[in-house]
Length: 147
Image 1 (cartoon, rainbow, N blue to C red):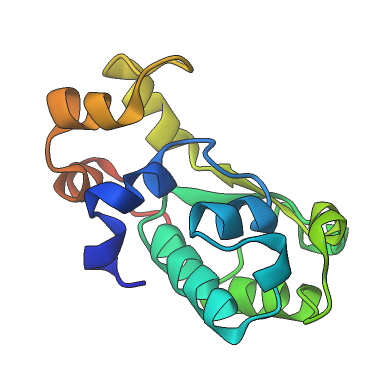
Image 2 (cartoon, rainbow, N blue to C red):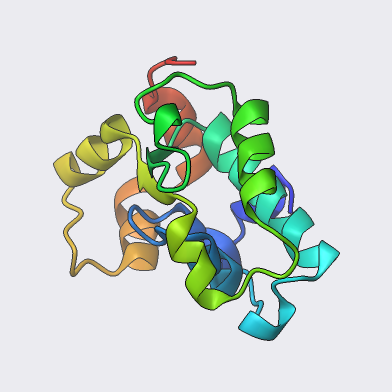
């Protein structure tokens, strides 16, 4: 996954606030079933996607369930990805992912989208098409520089 691919219509739901909270949900959104969690290809796609979302400053770690000492700390993206890599054992199964960490979205992102009219029942794809247009450009223009 690269940034250009992320902003393609078939991946646009990955950019919807609250679209995933756990790694297994992201894996599912990327097209992987629980029988594929161990695949190197799946891991690479997840880490590529996470890196982009963190770099865009729209994703955060809501709770480091397995590593609570990391909660509320400013951690560089590379270090976040390293920590996730240590949690995600090759033999991890569906229920293990609940014990790793919980993802959230940066407040600025959710608040700006709500100002434009986004609700929990809004069709995300139509919202982006008619209210935002170029989401990548919108993010660049609206995001604060926090990292």
